[in-house]
Amino acid sequence: MSALRLSLAQINPTVGDIAGNVALMSAAAQNAAVDGASMVIFPELSLTGYWPGDLLDEADFLARVDAGLAQLAAASRATPGLCWVVGAPTRRAGPGKRLHNSLLVLRDGEVVLSYAKQLLPTYNVFDESRHFAPGPDVARVLRVGGAQVGFLICEDGWNDDGADYAVNPFRRLADAAPDLVVSINASPSNIGKREQRHALFAAASRRHKLPLVYVNQIGGHDQLVYDGASFAVTPEDGVVFEAPRFVAAQVTLQWDGTAFRAGDGAPLAPVAAAGLPVMEFYRRQIVLGLRDYARRCGFKQVVVGSSGGIDSALTLALAAEALRPENVVAVTLPSRFSSSGSVDDSVTLCANLGIKLYTHPIKALVGQYEADFAAAFGEPLHGLALENLQARVRGTVLMAYSNRYGHLLLTTGNKSEISVGYCTLYGDTNGGLGLIGDLYKTEVFELCRHLNAEAGRELIPTAIIDKEPSAELAPDQRDSDSLPPYPVLDTILKVLIEGERLGADERAAVQADYATLAAGPDGPALIARVRRLIARNEYKRRQAPPILRLRGRAFGSGRQMPIAAKYD
Ligand SMILES: Nc1ncnc2c1ncn2[C@@H]1O[C@H](COP(=O)(O)OP(=O)(O)OC[C@H]2O[C@@H]([n+]3cccc(C(=O)O)c3)[C@H](O)[C@@H]2O)[C@@H](O)[C@H]1O
Ligand SMILES: Nc1ncnc2c1ncn2[C@@H]1O[C@H](COP(=O)(O)OP(=O)(O)OP(=O)(O)O)[C@@H](O)[C@H]1O
Ligand SMILES: NC(=O)CC[C@H](N)C(=O)O
Image 1 (tube, rainbow, N blue to C red):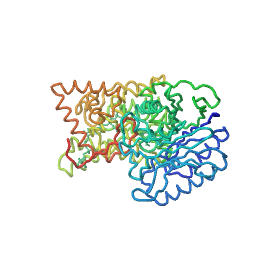
Image 2 (image 1 turned 45 degrees about the vertical axis):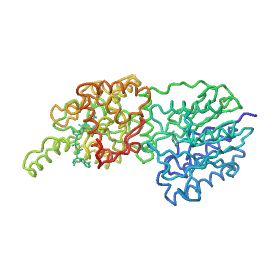
Image 3 (image 1 turned 45 degrees about the horizontal axis):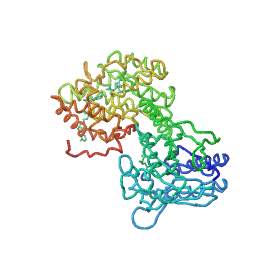
Image 4 (image 1 turned 30 degrees about the vertical axis):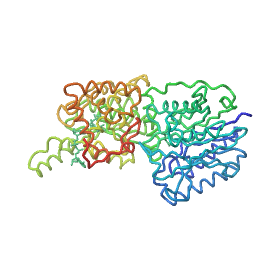
């Protein structure tokens, strides 16, 4: 056969923006045509962006989807012979859900193949059965050039891990004996996900002796970030090609019937088995997540309360990288319990990052509240009520900056404190998006050191990294007064919250530490206390802003726990 030219269009569609996505896809198809490709391959649900959610219930939206598909089909006339592999919801008749999650091949104005996704993920962050009916257990194959090409949609490829599943679309497709498989995907990224995809699809390719091209979307979509990292596998050599991660890309590959080559016919460079170092992965995922969230919600600038502590410092550093320093504003809000370092370290931090710092003391505001409450309660405000009042005054002041300047307020909670509720509702939980809410406190320290090392200078002052964590809401307060040391707390949290969803490398180490702890004299009581704190603080997480997902199990849609319940 003559070589098949495949154009992998790793695009960043915006959810709901049918007109914008049609334009994006049409431009990519034009490029592919100019490049002489036979096929341009877009991600799953590329017309709507993934995940459109309950937009799929709206008649208007579905009408726009139909019109968008018609536009794409019409546009395909301008690229004679080119197959456009697109993802879109399509209507179906009969009982059950009204829609399929479909892959359509458009060529010369016609739909020449239609395939409906069979395996609809409805676990963790996925909820596809809410809107889609599964497609029939059939393979779809199309002749393109001299090759028979078979098609799959994302989860369809995940039931081929060697176990004997009743529905296994990969096996069904293999029975139809295509020469090449094309898989379109919307696969959100978390640590270890790239390696998981590689292992799964390389094994399936080997098992069925089928080469495969995998195209993924990129971009930040609310809490989820898609890394792209589209790839190609062969039965003999496993992963032979990988597109860049965390950026949109359009890449041409040639398939000559036995091997993939680069668009210019050159052999492909080897693909590293190991992905990005974990800290670098976190950094890129957060940067893309914030950038797309802000852009899509219409924010140019963000504001963050800068306490001189490590969480706000890391949030500011990541925001400065994502949006550029001139678009990030910090506010220091000293109270009578704030250390001098809280202001001085914020000044150094903001100078290092090149961002503006406002000073807005809250002493007088809190003082006025204290006087009024003392009169109302007949005694001075003290303890938690006073601590939380300060956090709430800060939250209110920060929201005023957000309102006044139109900045998005970023919340700074990390996964350790969000887990156990070590944060004040309507106080430091205020904000529109959390950047580090899926990072344990021990990882917050590590990521700060990584950013400094990568920058080759001190972005986050050592004084901030080295200081003992404190909320500074009471005299001489330390996090360790209320919480176990963070390395201990994080070990317990990782097991209780993520358990089997921890990556294999991390799981072994964490489980060993946990077993040692559990066998110690205070271990069982401490674990029980942490378990109770996690359960009792579900109400706070339900009201908290979305956080960017980084790990296999993040708070948010991937962990749906009851509130008014008894299970601790
Ligand atoms: N199931 C439920 N559904 C709805 N509401 C529920 C509830 N359970 C309690 N509540 C309500 O929640 C309120 C208590 O929550 P909240 O007011 O947030 O306060 P609370 O959780 O009692 O205290 C906040 C804790 O976070 C610490 N903190 C605060 C700020 C920053 C940091 C830091 O270092 O980052 C740490 C602070 O030292 C304290 O230990 C009560 O009014 C209670 O009625
Ligand atoms: N003095 C302050 N000035 C400005 N913002 C503050 C101040 N104190 C607290 N905040 C805001 O409230 C958040 C929670 O702060 P707190 O110091 O109580 O705990 P933390 O979780 O240790 O955070 P950090 O490591 O940023 O200090 C901070 O990240 C910051 O955004
Ligand atoms: N869109 C999908 O079908 C995603 C499910 C798949 N297992 C993934 O995360 O890659």
